[in-house]
Image 1 (tube, rainbow, N blue to C red):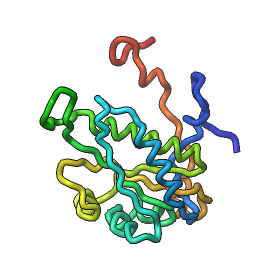
Image 2: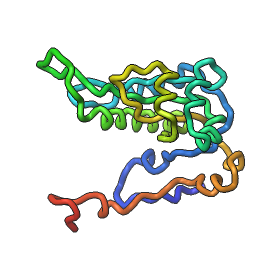
Image 3: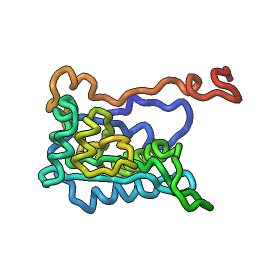
Image 4: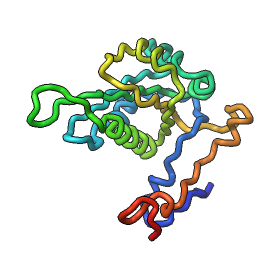
Length: 198
């Protein structure tokens, strides 16, 4: 199948071929393969290299899976039940910056965690897996389930799996199982001033 996503400027195909499916096979992922995705995330850039991200993972059919799975909203449970793993990405709200001795608020913790998520997603694509980040979860329930300290924010939960046949999804969801497009670059990138036309 040809890729319907066409960039307006030259980029590596990795960026248009990666997307976030919901249809997964039930293939398991070996822990070393999952750790390879987290290793890529570990090498993401962060402000002052404080690396605010933390990854709490669970592979399906392990004891760690159910508490994380149970925190997801019903819609997300419907499709993640076939995923090979779930990864919670959290980030420290404070950091000890260079030249300081005490932690202070880190305004970029979520931004940096986003860089880690992107690195995980691209490594998954390169490794023949797929990753889908989601915001639909009960944060209090998830925080308790994984024992996350108060100083950390939950940024997302990521489902990892082998891309499957859309027929495993309910009809209403199946129709959305295609790579999404993006708005034109001219609507997002401006020279010198927000909204300026090039």
